[in-house]
Amino acid sequence: MTVNIELPNEVYAQAAAIAQSQQIDVAEVLLAACTEHFATWERLQQRAKRADRTKFLEVLAKVPDVEPDATDRLTTQNGGSSCLRPPSLS
Image (cartoon, rainbow, N blue to C red; front, side, top):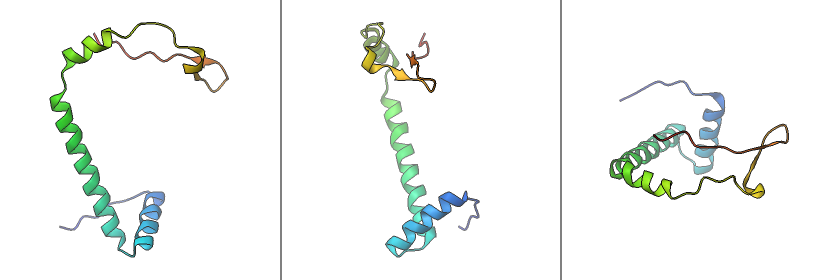
């Protein structure tokens, strides 16, 4: 099957550079990238099927709700510190 797609210039340039270094066609690089991405997607879906939300919430409940140490804080663009909190899981 033949499919025409539009790629951003930087993506094509990256694929072309890989193709040149490996002495293969750009189409082969793009096919390999797509194939690997789809395989990764499938692995993640399989792992998600094994997930247990109840067990996850039980483990999460054991994590203390305390402010992070100063060394664990994120620095904002204006130089201040920020503490990111996960969204509510209820």
